[in-house]
Length: 228
Length: 80
Image 1 (cartoon, rainbow over the protein chains, first blue to last red):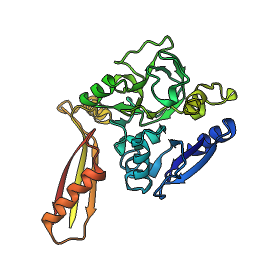
Image 2: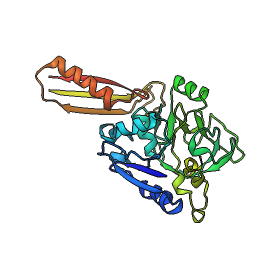
Image 3: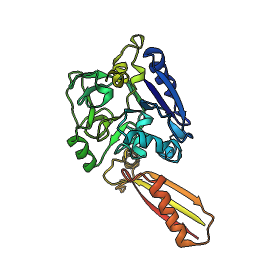
Image 4: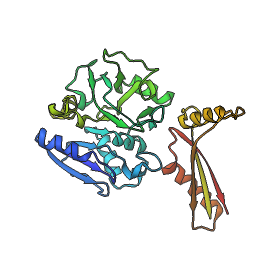
């Protein structure tokens, strides 16, 4: 399969994502700069990696709105093709309206880096096919703007549509929506688009994708679309 | 012309920085402080002589880029 990675000035996760898809999974990877107007036509999977695009100025992900590649990203997502948005990529997709809600500074105004427990609640996303519903995994987070926020209407829409695919929990899989570690709404760790082809999450699967890194649960996520 | 745009988090979005600053002000003896909101102030220089058009353009800037209506609200002002 062919994977496109959309890069903005300040995206820094592209190298790791490319490494995993190319070297570990043996796939073809093309990196697409934000000033390109189109993605190559034969791309199967699109990844918007983490980082701090445009210095996180104004709001993280906001200034991506002025980039040419944004309409191609919207189109790819709308065509129900597998799209993965990691960290700052998730913030970008919220800012350009592909996913609802927004990412705010963590409660306590702290940069948080650790490996939270995450419950895989729904496996409709092509990236979650390798997991069982209810499975508890761990993926690293490292961010300041990681608190997912949706207003009542957005949260209701997400919950009723089975779109809260990933939720922070404890090691037993128990979710306390009142007390997620970063203060996010409904303990949301990751959401999908209406048709579940787009997955946005703050955690970094590419940093838990080789045994020597301590976990391969991120690899299971990244290789999800290669399975079907 | 010059425009200013003030951007704040919406009332129902927790303003963690504002809350923290309020608590510190109270602990320094400013017990009269009821609320602190932290936001952004943008000053924008605009080449235009038409005030009404400028007001519309600034509104458009707010909705297309400057303000994320999912979490923020804003007050824009055009100064001549």
